[in-house]
Structures are given as C-alpha cells and as structure tokens.
Amino acid sequence: MNPEDAVIKLNKELGRMDDNLFEVIKIYENFFGEWIVHLKVRRMVKASYSTLKRIAEITGAKDILIERAEGDNLAEIKLMLPK
Image (tube, rainbow, N blue to C red; front, side, top):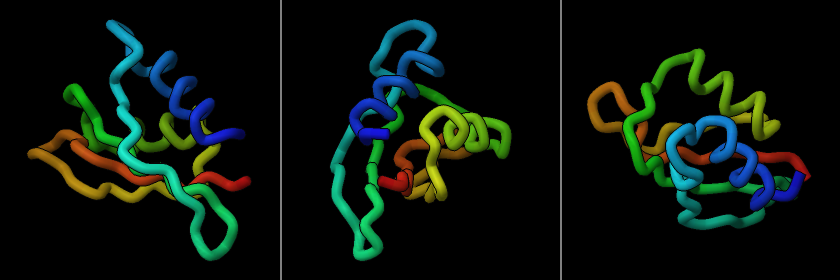
C-alpha cells in the first residue's frame, strides 16, 4: 500500500470528527526498502495495545514506534510499511 493512501485510510477509520487526526511529518525509505512514515497525532489517542493493533491492521504496518507520548496519549509515531 502506498504510504499516503495508508495515512488517508487511517484518518478515515480513526478520525471520527474530521480526517486530520494524523498529520504526516516525513515519509522516507529505509535501508531494507520499507517505508517509514513519521506521523504527528493531532488529538488525544490512547497509547494502548488495542489502539496500536488497530493502527497496524488498518495500515498494514509491520512495526510501530512510539516516538513521543504525552502522558497516556500518543503525540508522534513512526510506522514501518512494507512496499
């Protein structure tokens, strides 16, 4: 899946009030040929296993890194998406 399409799909699924829950900071390719998508979370999203699992299921991410959290909420995450 194209990384931009994955973020659009994620915003449609989890962004109930608007489609701007996740904002792309940067998209780049790593050494192994996978996409790394650095996202800023614009509203409060709990940093729980069920939330991260749902993000992975929607985007097809192989790995999710919590880059920064504010209390129990996600602030920035990185997704590793296969090509």
